[in-house]
Each structure stands twice: as structure tokens, then as C-alpha cells.
Length: 212
Image (cartoon, rainbow, N blue to C red; front, side):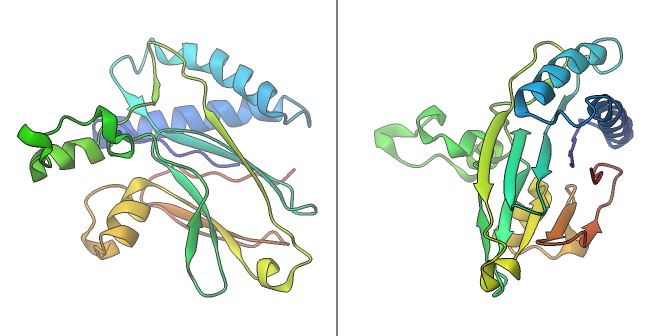
């Protein structure tokens, strides 16, 4: 299970990331094997109330992956712009979820006169404006994405699951910015299907994995 958190300032970002990840992991472990999406969502709703005294002005994106390594069943609960995808043997990524960003909803983006495209600065703002996020004021129910990997299929068995922050999937993969030149958080985690093999690259303590 993983979760990714972003915040307004680097110092606060790491403190919020550690608090949200550690506190939620402890609560998840207390579920004692009852890892249904409703059980986890109820836990998240209750845990969100703890943010009000410490992180009133911060917002976050996070995701929780529940992966059955024996059956290939995938459950992804997320809020914000973190994404999950399947990496084919060729290296191509098939993203399974749609990020909660303003540019993903064209009808919400103001248009120029005569229906012309908005200027680049406004477009950049839309790419960095979340339409759904974790915050201290109100709990937003995370979206649920389900999928299944046929681990008996040789091609799919050779695939991997990748989880990435917006710096990774948007700036690095889509815009082609080198990892060393990225300003935004560009953490990503890959999990090899059919086993407990994973690769983690993160510049902040915001990705955690437990096997159950």
C-alpha cells in the first residue's frame, strides 16, 4: 500500500507526508486483514480530522494500492494527481486513473474570446490546480479504480505496476524533462507482478509499502 502527499512548502510537505502516511499505516494495520475499500475509506475519513490542528492550510494528493499478488486483483484509491499505471514489456505505460486536475475537465477552464485557447500561463495554472484533494476542512471520498492482471498470461506476467507523482508522470514522462532538472517532487514506485520485487525512487518520505 502506498500513499503520496504534497504540500505548500518543502518543510511542511515532508512533515505532512510523514504524518499522513505513518498514521494511516498504523490504522490500516489495525484493520487486521479487513482491507475492503469501505473499511479503508472510513478509516481515512476519521483520520482526516486529525489534520485540523496541525495542517489547516495544507492540501495533499495521496493514493492507496491494494494488490493481490496471487490473483492479480488491483484496487487503487486516490485523491489528487498521483497516478497508477501498467508498464508493458515494451516499456509503454497504460495509465489506469485520471488525475484530479483542472486541465482534465475542459468545461471548467475559462476560454478566450471567440472560444480561442487560453494563454500559456493560464494553461499552466490549470495543470497545477487540483479539483479534488486531501485537506483539513472537509473530507473528500477518494475515487476507486479496479483492475485485474492476468498473471498466467506470459506478457502480462512480465509487466509491472508503476505509481508516480505528478513530477514523474507529467513533467518527466509527458514533457520530457530530465529527472535531475525537475523542480517538483518526482517520486515513483514500480512493483513487479507475481512477486515481492519493487523499485523505489523518491526525494521525500512519501512512499510506503507493506506486505500482508
